[in-house]
Image 1 (cartoon, rainbow, N blue to C red):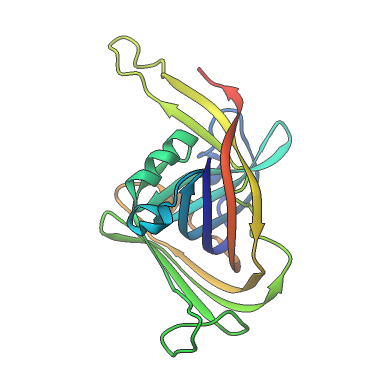
Image 2: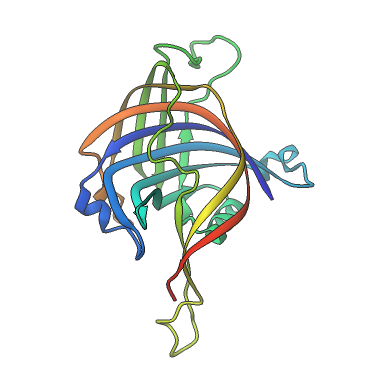
Length: 242
Protein backbone atom coordinates (compact mmCIF):
# COMPACT_ATOMS: atom_id res chain seq x y z
CA UNK A 1 0.00 0.00 0.00
CA UNK A 2 0.93 3.62 -0.55
CA UNK A 3 -0.21 6.01 2.18
CA UNK A 4 -0.54 9.66 1.22
CA UNK A 5 -1.28 13.01 2.85
CA UNK A 6 -1.46 16.32 1.01
CA UNK A 7 -2.32 20.02 1.03
CA UNK A 8 -4.52 21.12 -1.87
CA UNK A 9 -5.38 24.30 -3.71
CA UNK A 10 -8.07 23.71 -6.35
CA UNK A 11 -10.14 25.79 -8.76
CA UNK A 12 -13.32 24.81 -10.59
CA UNK A 13 -13.83 26.16 -14.10
CA UNK A 14 -15.66 25.56 -17.35
CA UNK A 15 -13.94 24.77 -20.64
CA UNK A 16 -15.24 24.45 -24.18
CA UNK A 17 -17.32 21.24 -24.25
CA UNK A 18 -16.13 20.10 -27.68
CA UNK A 19 -12.47 20.64 -26.78
CA UNK A 20 -12.90 18.76 -23.50
CA UNK A 21 -14.64 15.80 -25.16
CA UNK A 22 -11.73 15.44 -27.61
CA UNK A 23 -9.48 14.38 -24.71
CA UNK A 24 -11.68 11.49 -23.57
CA UNK A 25 -10.60 7.92 -24.39
CA UNK A 26 -12.83 5.16 -25.69
CA UNK A 27 -15.36 4.13 -23.07
CA UNK A 28 -15.94 7.59 -21.61
CA UNK A 29 -18.31 10.35 -22.74
CA UNK A 30 -18.49 13.97 -21.71
CA UNK A 31 -20.80 14.70 -18.78
CA UNK A 32 -20.44 18.48 -18.74
CA UNK A 33 -17.88 21.19 -19.46
CA UNK A 34 -17.05 21.42 -15.74
CA UNK A 35 -13.31 21.02 -15.08
CA UNK A 36 -11.03 21.42 -12.09
CA UNK A 37 -7.33 22.01 -11.58
CA UNK A 38 -5.56 20.83 -8.43
CA UNK A 39 -2.20 22.09 -7.14
CA UNK A 40 -0.98 19.62 -4.51
CA UNK A 41 1.91 19.08 -2.09
CA UNK A 42 2.17 15.36 -1.25
CA UNK A 43 3.99 13.25 1.32
CA UNK A 44 3.83 9.44 1.27
CA UNK A 45 4.97 6.30 3.06
CA UNK A 46 4.81 2.58 2.33
CA UNK A 47 3.07 0.15 4.66
CA UNK A 48 6.15 -0.77 6.68
CA UNK A 49 8.37 2.22 5.94
CA UNK A 50 8.98 5.69 7.29
CA UNK A 51 9.87 7.35 4.01
CA UNK A 52 8.70 10.68 5.40
CA UNK A 53 11.95 10.78 7.42
CA UNK A 54 13.74 11.18 4.07
CA UNK A 55 11.76 14.12 2.64
CA UNK A 56 13.67 14.28 -0.63
CA UNK A 57 12.13 10.90 -1.50
CA UNK A 58 8.75 11.14 0.20
CA UNK A 59 7.65 14.64 -0.83
CA UNK A 60 6.57 15.90 -4.23
CA UNK A 61 4.30 18.48 -5.83
CA UNK A 62 2.01 18.12 -8.79
CA UNK A 63 -0.71 19.78 -10.85
CA UNK A 64 -3.75 17.76 -11.95
CA UNK A 65 -6.38 18.70 -14.54
CA UNK A 66 -9.69 16.83 -14.46
CA UNK A 67 -12.68 16.63 -16.81
CA UNK A 68 -16.30 15.72 -15.98
CA UNK A 69 -17.00 12.41 -17.75
CA UNK A 70 -19.23 9.38 -17.42
CA UNK A 71 -18.76 5.65 -17.82
CA UNK A 72 -21.97 3.74 -18.57
CA UNK A 73 -24.02 6.61 -17.12
CA UNK A 74 -21.87 6.69 -13.96
CA UNK A 75 -20.27 10.11 -13.34
CA UNK A 76 -16.53 10.15 -12.78
CA UNK A 77 -13.56 12.37 -13.44
CA UNK A 78 -10.95 11.80 -16.14
CA UNK A 79 -7.37 13.12 -16.08
CA UNK A 80 -5.93 14.21 -19.45
CA UNK A 81 -2.94 16.07 -17.97
CA UNK A 82 -0.87 15.83 -14.79
CA UNK A 83 2.61 17.15 -14.01
CA UNK A 84 4.84 16.01 -11.14
CA UNK A 85 8.34 16.94 -9.95
CA UNK A 86 9.69 13.61 -8.66
CA UNK A 87 10.70 10.46 -10.52
CA UNK A 88 9.33 7.91 -8.05
CA UNK A 89 5.94 9.62 -8.07
CA UNK A 90 5.99 9.74 -11.86
CA UNK A 91 6.56 5.97 -12.11
CA UNK A 92 3.90 5.14 -9.52
CA UNK A 93 1.50 7.33 -11.45
CA UNK A 94 2.19 5.63 -14.78
CA UNK A 95 1.54 2.25 -13.15
CA UNK A 96 -1.84 3.49 -11.91
CA UNK A 97 -2.78 5.21 -15.16
CA UNK A 98 -2.08 8.85 -14.34
CA UNK A 99 -0.47 10.36 -17.49
CA UNK A 100 2.30 12.02 -15.52
CA UNK A 101 4.94 14.27 -17.05
CA UNK A 102 7.63 16.34 -15.35
CA UNK A 103 6.71 19.90 -14.39
CA UNK A 104 7.31 22.39 -11.60
CA UNK A 105 4.43 23.20 -9.23
CA UNK A 106 4.74 26.02 -6.68
CA UNK A 107 2.18 26.70 -3.93
CA UNK A 108 1.86 29.41 -1.28
CA UNK A 109 2.54 27.95 2.17
CA UNK A 110 0.94 28.85 5.48
CA UNK A 111 2.63 28.52 8.86
CA UNK A 112 1.61 28.25 12.50
CA UNK A 113 3.00 31.71 13.27
CA UNK A 114 1.46 34.99 12.10
CA UNK A 115 3.66 36.72 9.54
CA UNK A 116 3.40 39.16 6.66
CA UNK A 117 5.29 36.49 4.68
CA UNK A 118 2.49 33.92 4.85
CA UNK A 119 -1.34 33.81 4.98
CA UNK A 120 -3.30 31.83 7.57
CA UNK A 121 -6.51 29.93 6.96
CA UNK A 122 -9.38 32.33 7.39
CA UNK A 123 -11.60 34.84 5.67
CA UNK A 124 -9.68 37.11 3.32
CA UNK A 125 -6.52 34.98 3.15
CA UNK A 126 -5.01 34.74 -0.33
CA UNK A 127 -3.13 31.75 -1.73
CA UNK A 128 -1.43 31.34 -5.11
CA UNK A 129 -0.11 28.43 -7.14
CA UNK A 130 1.58 27.99 -10.51
CA UNK A 131 2.71 25.32 -12.95
CA UNK A 132 5.77 25.58 -15.20
CA UNK A 133 6.53 23.03 -17.93
CA UNK A 134 9.85 22.88 -19.80
CA UNK A 135 10.82 26.29 -18.43
CA UNK A 136 7.57 28.02 -19.44
CA UNK A 137 4.75 29.07 -17.13
CA UNK A 138 1.70 27.01 -18.06
CA UNK A 139 -0.96 27.86 -15.46
CA UNK A 140 -1.51 30.02 -12.39
CA UNK A 141 -4.26 30.58 -9.83
CA UNK A 142 -5.04 32.95 -6.97
CA UNK A 143 -7.65 31.99 -4.36
CA UNK A 144 -9.18 34.31 -1.76
CA UNK A 145 -10.74 32.36 1.10
CA UNK A 146 -14.23 33.42 2.17
CA UNK A 147 -15.83 30.70 4.30
CA UNK A 148 -15.78 27.05 5.28
CA UNK A 149 -17.86 24.61 3.23
CA UNK A 150 -18.96 20.99 3.34
CA UNK A 151 -18.47 20.55 -0.42
CA UNK A 152 -15.38 19.58 -2.40
CA UNK A 153 -14.28 20.78 -5.84
CA UNK A 154 -16.00 19.10 -8.78
CA UNK A 155 -14.83 16.91 -10.39
CA UNK A 156 -12.77 15.32 -7.62
CA UNK A 157 -9.70 13.15 -8.15
CA UNK A 158 -10.88 10.36 -5.82
CA UNK A 159 -12.13 7.45 -7.92
CA UNK A 160 -11.12 9.02 -11.21
CA UNK A 161 -11.10 7.01 -14.44
CA UNK A 162 -7.58 6.55 -15.79
CA UNK A 163 -6.06 5.13 -18.96
CA UNK A 164 -3.27 2.58 -18.51
CA UNK A 165 -1.39 2.48 -21.81
CA UNK A 166 2.00 0.92 -22.56
CA UNK A 167 3.00 0.55 -26.24
CA UNK A 168 4.47 -2.55 -27.85
CA UNK A 169 7.87 -1.95 -29.42
CA UNK A 170 8.26 -5.28 -31.25
CA UNK A 171 8.32 -4.69 -35.01
CA UNK A 172 5.02 -5.57 -36.64
CA UNK A 173 3.10 -5.21 -33.37
CA UNK A 174 3.30 -1.44 -32.85
CA UNK A 175 -0.47 -1.10 -33.26
CA UNK A 176 -1.12 -3.70 -30.53
CA UNK A 177 -0.18 -2.13 -27.18
CA UNK A 178 1.10 -4.34 -24.39
CA UNK A 179 -1.40 -2.71 -22.00
CA UNK A 180 -4.44 -0.65 -23.00
CA UNK A 181 -7.21 -0.49 -20.42
CA UNK A 182 -9.58 1.98 -18.82
CA UNK A 183 -9.34 1.67 -15.05
CA UNK A 184 -10.66 3.29 -11.90
CA UNK A 185 -8.42 3.97 -8.92
CA UNK A 186 -9.67 2.77 -5.53
CA UNK A 187 -8.77 4.68 -2.36
CA UNK A 188 -9.53 3.79 1.24
CA UNK A 189 -9.24 5.39 4.66
CA UNK A 190 -9.92 8.79 3.11
CA UNK A 191 -9.89 11.70 5.57
CA UNK A 192 -10.52 15.35 4.68
CA UNK A 193 -9.74 18.44 6.73
CA UNK A 194 -12.10 21.41 7.05
CA UNK A 195 -12.54 22.87 3.55
CA UNK A 196 -12.33 26.59 2.78
CA UNK A 197 -13.69 28.10 -0.43
CA UNK A 198 -13.70 31.51 -2.05
CA UNK A 199 -13.17 33.57 -5.16
CA UNK A 200 -10.57 32.41 -7.66
CA UNK A 201 -8.72 33.45 -10.79
CA UNK A 202 -7.19 31.02 -13.28
CA UNK A 203 -4.96 31.58 -16.28
CA UNK A 204 -3.79 28.85 -18.66
CA UNK A 205 -1.12 29.79 -21.20
CA UNK A 206 -0.33 28.37 -24.61
CA UNK A 207 2.66 26.05 -24.76
CA UNK A 208 4.55 24.60 -27.75
CA UNK A 209 4.87 21.12 -26.18
CA UNK A 210 1.28 20.19 -25.21
CA UNK A 211 -2.40 20.89 -25.85
CA UNK A 212 -3.45 22.05 -22.36
CA UNK A 213 -4.43 25.45 -23.79
CA UNK A 214 -7.38 23.71 -25.49
CA UNK A 215 -8.78 23.33 -21.95
CA UNK A 216 -8.46 27.03 -21.11
CA UNK A 217 -11.29 28.47 -18.99
CA UNK A 218 -14.33 30.09 -20.54
CA UNK A 219 -15.64 30.70 -17.01
CA UNK A 220 -13.85 30.46 -13.64
CA UNK A 221 -15.72 29.22 -10.57
CA UNK A 222 -14.73 28.83 -6.94
CA UNK A 223 -11.39 28.08 -5.36
CA UNK A 224 -10.76 25.63 -2.50
CA UNK A 225 -8.13 24.91 0.12
CA UNK A 226 -8.01 21.71 2.20
CA UNK A 227 -5.93 18.68 3.18
CA UNK A 228 -6.49 14.99 2.39
CA UNK A 229 -5.07 11.67 3.58
CA UNK A 230 -5.73 8.33 1.87
CA UNK A 231 -4.36 4.89 1.07
CA UNK A 232 -4.07 3.38 -2.43
CA UNK A 233 -3.70 -0.37 -2.89
CA UNK A 234 -6.27 -1.42 -5.48
CA UNK A 235 -7.38 -0.80 -9.05
CA UNK A 236 -10.52 -1.76 -10.96
CA UNK A 237 -10.37 -2.54 -14.69
CA UNK A 238 -13.43 -0.96 -16.33
CA UNK A 239 -12.70 -1.89 -19.95
CA UNK A 240 -9.85 -3.75 -21.67
CA UNK A 241 -9.30 -1.78 -24.88
CA UNK A 242 -6.76 -4.14 -26.47
